[in-house]
Length: 251
Image (tube, rainbow, N blue to C red):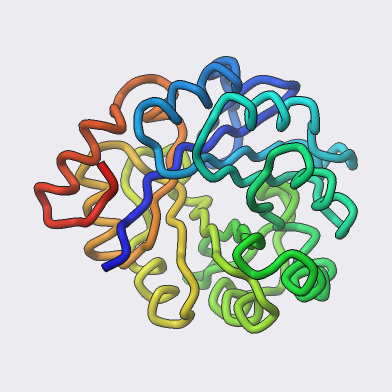
């Protein structure tokens, strides 16, 4: 049986880790290199680094910072933000990333998913999907959640799988930063729809929310930020509780 993964997320702006609510009102959460080392030492299964303003500012991911983070951790490391070409990915992989996460660029140029999967393998390609409900439909948003698209979450998820994505990182913008729990209904639907792992993101506030994401949402991994950054939940304690709920995790 595959173990479920716990993934802290470093949202980076101006070289610092930040966290907001519903993608706005960002506040400082610390030094990304220090946080990365803490999470790696505490037993996180993977780490995600998202340069959240790279697309909006039309620039590339912060490569120096990626290299520093990679040198301090010994767990798989996914990097996203401002990636729009095979060359961008090559640079990040050379500087310590194990996987890349693409979002806006994948929607604007879906062929990029095929190209990256072909060049680097599906296991390297995570497609991040930010979506929120509009008139009860889950609508995909771009540029850090600022720009709505015509795409439905579920149609787009099927397409990215067909194009070669190895994983989907689904963030519910409605739940993001609210600490009210993950969007488990949408997660369960996604898990039924595609055969690649789904990472749940947006809404973690307590340990039960992680339990629910795995049991009700059928997620393969759960990603969170502020509850880890501000020491509201310790990864070791979380994993122990997941085990107590018969959820397989790496201790």
